[in-house]
Image (cartoon, rainbow, N blue to C red; front, side):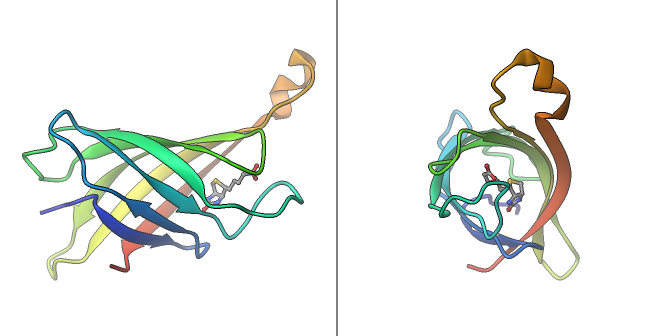
Length: 122
Ligand code: BTN
């Protein structure tokens, strides 16, 4: 039912492509964010993830990280795939965005947190 593979968009307009999950539950893909905490030019960036119970396909939990190609930051998403009664799939996620700081004294301000819902566009 809930298949992570495909093209997804979140409430910010960011697009992500998730490739097929293998039997071990790992997957890769790419992420095109519409927003950034830096002023650098945004580049499409790779993601690597894992999902639970890849063959059961119920409402699996998953996690993935994005290695931004235009900043020193890393984002980790965790979430779960849901399907409503009409068959519409959503990925409900929570993310942590860690930025590189020059001193551990700045750790207190180095992590942003948020939630994001993705809907399938393909
Ligand atoms: C950076 O700003 O250093 C890298 C880009 C971060 C984009 C964040 S990740 C969480 C949130 N959801 C998105 O689709 N984009 C932002």
